[in-house]
Image (cartoon, rainbow over the protein chains, first blue to last red):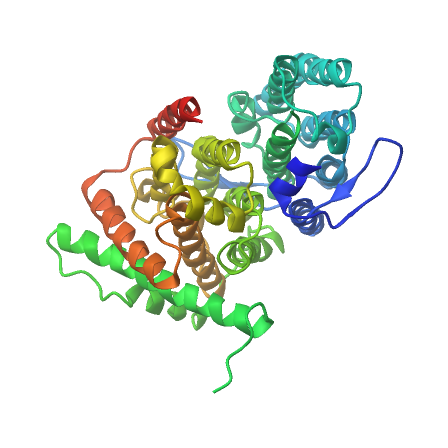
Length: 223
Length: 290
């Protein structure tokens, strides 16, 4: 537990569930509040009327998001928010990887119904990156489990670092970076945010940075 | 005379107001220095604060194309995260990880502010905000090095470590420089400020006026103060650990930032990201000294 305390000063509360111990620190509480507030506002917001200008035309067009499309994307946004709460509160690395994967899937879902070739192409490529990165993501966790016999962050925090754990951490880093559309795998994300529908697009950026901040904490704790 | 107890709500509120006023004066000084270097008289130092207050009495305009209530709520979120960062950092000396989170949410808010109006200019600003988020590597590298060196990310413990062992700047100079570059990238008129470049009018802020612009400026002033304080506390905490020394050093660093901003042009978006990455990777050399 020392590393968790060194990072967060104290633990507000935890739930004993075998060796899987979801816990709440001031850091994770701040993350949860941020995610809940953002999810509520993003779900309540109506899509903007995007103004589009083109070279060679002296007109400004406004584009809209259809009701059916907005409904599905709003659902995916809320689901992404729920998955993010799992990412930041879990005390088990395997659960972390599952929630990160769910975040990736919902991110693709947010863009899957957008009727724009560029956006769909980018979403498809992001899906490919996600599938490729699932191997290091789960491989890293498997390596950590094989070496230490546990996936509980509370227990892992007390186990000193060693080369195998470091390799596991590196794999976890690569996997989560790919699933969360972070640099250097973020190129498709920049293409995807060309889509209309401000509230839903913003959730993708939020999820990337929340996964990233939580990932840093986990990498510090393990080993 | 009765003073509010440290840690009480009133005490925190007074500190918040003090930080806002002092941060506003620092940004005013920053503008003054830039103007003097460029041979202009420049605005008075209090101008940035007056500019902020002015927006609170201006008419609030909301574009018909905007995404409501996101258009207003995201600005409040930007200010709220910096209030949280201020309370966790300078006031309570709590976990630095929460300040990293606040910085991340600041980037999300920049993106959201740009998206919410429906304007192509703000959209371009928000796209650059996503792009520039990848340039925040120093924010990850520096805390990682500090953690490996001090085995803590709680600010009070980092300060105590430096009082006992000397300032971290001596052990992690490249990490300090990388963090300084990050601080520079959050200063107005800086060479990395692609998100509010004048080539896209005012970037993501183009469509925000009236009281919400005032709230946005309040958040930005507080953000500048918090980042400046974090830079000095984390790397020079062994030397500057009293309010007076920290405030004087903040003025000194602001003057340096003013000189840099006045003498450097704005860099192209991809170059901006690349240069910040180079400084972050250079900071990793400090791993050898841990």
